[in-house]
Image (cartoon, rainbow, N blue to C red; front, side, top):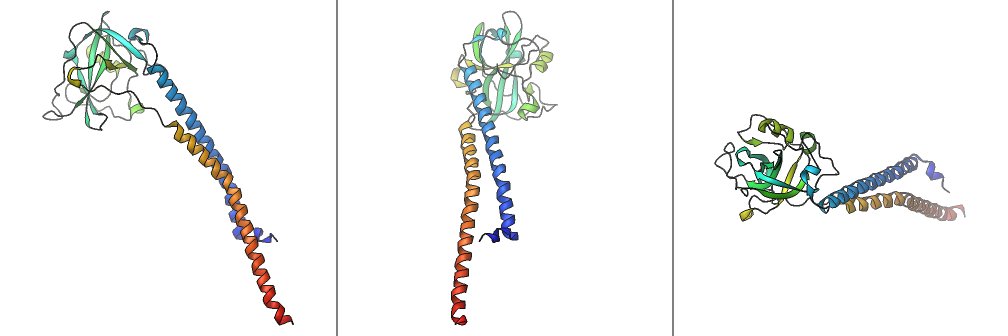
Length: 263
């Protein structure tokens, strides 16, 4: 009755089904791990953003590498901006995907150490790409700023090439060690994405909070792959039953046609 399962066509179909089931299960497990990883990162970012603000000196120091756990933690710094050593970071986009610069201003703390402040985004509307753009001035005098603590940027992490030979006071990556050599000062590791005080005239545009990764999408893919895995044997059995039915009906028709000839 089921001898057709030994035919070449059905052997191949059965082997393909047997291979698809574990493959789909493994894909579901991979999506489950992606969901767990993204959920953990989302929780880490949320915890950092909502943590109580602390002085930046409590979170980093010269030569210190800001960890993933400390990234986005709100920190405060008291001192004054050093605009004469200000630089801009090339090829940065705002929320509307317009290309411009990030403004990076050294901030001299009360103890003489320096922390880098990313004050936000400005458009690339200068006379040329080599000219230093017009940058809005920060608050003068002693001031307290707050923002998100960020790790030094690297090509490996950002995908941005650290090009050399750039115009004066223009850089590609925000790196505290490179800026320490340029400034000849003790620079705290990482940098601050400024969130307060807000700039006058809304420029530079401050960088918005990081968005959450779409972990629920991975969860949906996980369920989808496992449903597919469960559907494979069911679909195989439906095809087997249909094939058996078709063969039985064909055999009955052949038998019916043969009876008159026998009489």
